[in-house]
Length: 317
Image 1 (cartoon, helix red, strand yellow):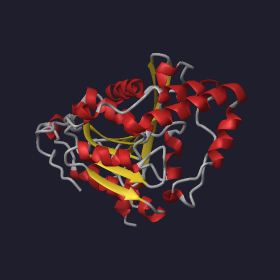
Image 2: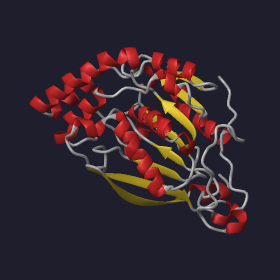
Image 3: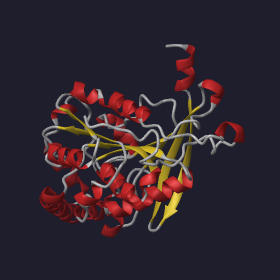
Image 4: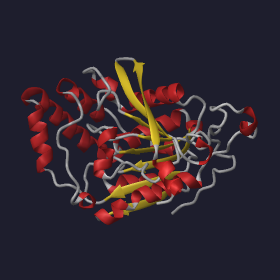
């Protein structure tokens, strides 16, 4: 490792809490302290890392779903969804639907990274959150990396029914029943050998409502998704009924120029961070022409993404 690499590995982190209706969201912004000029990554668009249902950003790396490992030169914003991890929430199912989580995300971005385009990464519920948010503010996203997209549209009803039944069991028998059921479920082959965390990163008194909120959610209408012009990388894995390859394939068809890779082995899953980093670097938004003269840290950030502008070209893989 070179001296430069040592510098780039140094990061500073700040934790922020953001109040939204019915919840307090816990977010952590990390920035490199080394590198050329010690810019703290302000000259590059930041990366936002989300997580899946009943998980949290602190656990994303355990399952191979933290895509920021090869993006050490950038600022990284990690946020726990309401009622997950270090965030709070109330036992109201409507609070935990995907459109509501998208509203939360956009509020976080405007509070912590105002005016900046971001590269956004999220698995499962996080991927769904990003699609809903991107339809509200497409200019906010320089690129999307959607990991293990969940059941959607025709396949959603079956999964929604499972969530509602699980919520009823949790509410009547407690969280231990949820943990036992998860322990009995087979993991996708791509996760072989990785540690499993069966206990939810959600408080017991809110878990039922979180599951019901997921049951009441779906991906946006395909016609609306097809109108997005954001460079998108889709990463799916095999043998997971809750995250079927069919959803990723359908999104690949809908999103013009998107790329899709499927992991059937741990080695293929291990390649995902490199794929994500390549995708981010390939779709860096433009920096303001006057950023070097202005000297302000925010001016060094990237302009909000414009699909018709430079840096928006992408191809179908």
